[in-house]
Image (tube, rainbow, N blue to C red; front, side):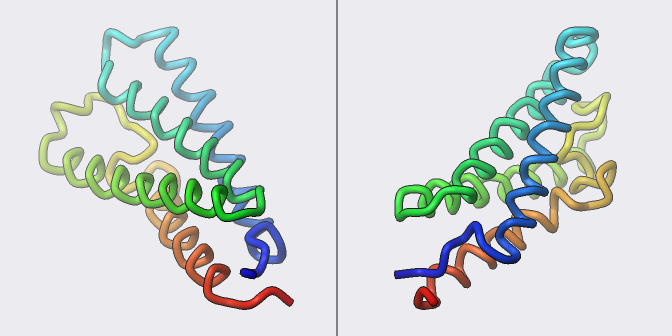
Length: 133
């Protein structure tokens, strides 16, 4: 059986994902409520990012094979999202009149949105390969 994902460094990962779920969700909620018409794509992507962070938080915090699979899917989707939105926001800035969490590869958040899924995938791989202690 694999080492529990929510122990040791996994707790830090869960905490960071939780903070990002709250911050991205709060930001998207305010943006959508106050000025959705100004940048609907950007604000919708921020809301999507918040949902992905929330799913990853819950899945990483739980034990079991199903939670591991959900975590892999959520964190993998997050990496795909940050790479896609990051690239598109640089290639077509007019499509993103306001930043999303994933714009410019997460530059507005100190590039944590780019580093976080890499760390998450490495942790998931590491804990799926080691026997439980």
